[in-house]
Length: 538
Ligand code: GLU
Image 1 (cartoon, rainbow, N blue to C red):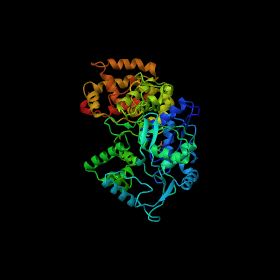
Image 2 (image 1 turned 90 degrees about the horizontal axis):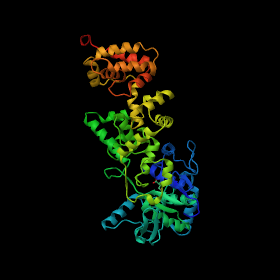
Image 3 (image 1 turned 90 degrees about the vertical axis):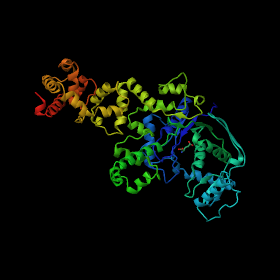
Image 4 (image 1 turned 60 degrees about the horizontal axis):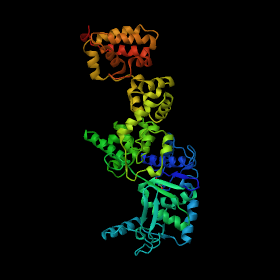
């Protein structure tokens, strides 16, 4: 490594949520910068005026903060745009665009999208890839379409050394003259990325392999502008277990399937618009596969109560994955720290991380492994840490668990720590602490209506009513007695459990009753006793 301070960047386009693949790119850039005592820059690439939104940018910042990936330079969360938003840097880009025009390296072009499509088709017919070149015949005359600026790529082979993939070469006849300024006056990604990486002093560009073929174009620009390019490293893509690329389409596909199944059950698709709050025309476009909007997918999932596959960082957060577990898991997609290491702290990641240990081929996103890892993290964590995780989870979800006081949170976390894979599972399974449980019909039949159920429940009620000091010590011996109650040891506790929790599964009864409190416990037992039909009891 040369003496120049390492500076990496993560440069998301704010056109949607932060995808786990993007989070992995951010993590590797963060690790590389931190490992080398350098700086990590966050830059918002919002040159696409139509698709970029402030909401998306804010969401990306929030997700990075949740993951604990702090940046040294970049947007200030909660404030207005600053110079780390490309849309605030037009003056800078315009200066360099002018320079290229003056140097004869950039030129105007006037094709309409239709003309370009026709040219592409003609090339395809001749089994040639379409490459726009300044010297090609048939270029449009000024005024025939919107004016863009194109960069004249040299007809020379461009070779660079990718720090992960090795030497990459693209022949002179494989280039095309890319657009560098759009008709709306904004620079394209290709141009802005080069200007900014240079202007911000980025030394290493680490990004996903889908950008690999952009790099020769960028190198052409560096050369034309007389700048030294940064080093490049392209990271493997993130794939699903079935070898398809993990993309937001997985979510929209699942939402469409859920909507189709719902309509097939005889429901009217107009009602879906009401249920989701999505205007009918937008919904139709989505269902007809004309638009792939994650927001619409999420609205359908919520309205129909269907879980969609988690793709974006916030999906995993809402599903109750801990940020450290998710970060650990995504670090291992395409990177192997060696010695079969799996659970790694941030410090260990920093110690072991190097570009040489990143793979060349795509990594797999194994959801089962992530769930396992999350459970491991939950079990190994202190209650204090878990409480922080829970606060972050509660901030983006709306389970009744939100009502828990700090003390109740700690008690619940201690109870569920050994028996939950995610915080969402815990939130789901602990609902009965905060709201009247819905009675599991099969459990009710088995543990209350049959055998000694009613008798046992009445006895239990009397035993518990006698406990006035409702805390661990006085309750423990009573629970012991309940275990012994009746002919079949252990039957009565299940009767009690179903009565107070609604179903046959809960954390240990002693802790459960303590947390529920005397009043709620007795009221729930009474409610169940009130269900007894006169004929069914003694
Ligand atoms: N804005 C680009 C993206 O989100 C950044 C690519 C790059 O790192 O150069 O894909």
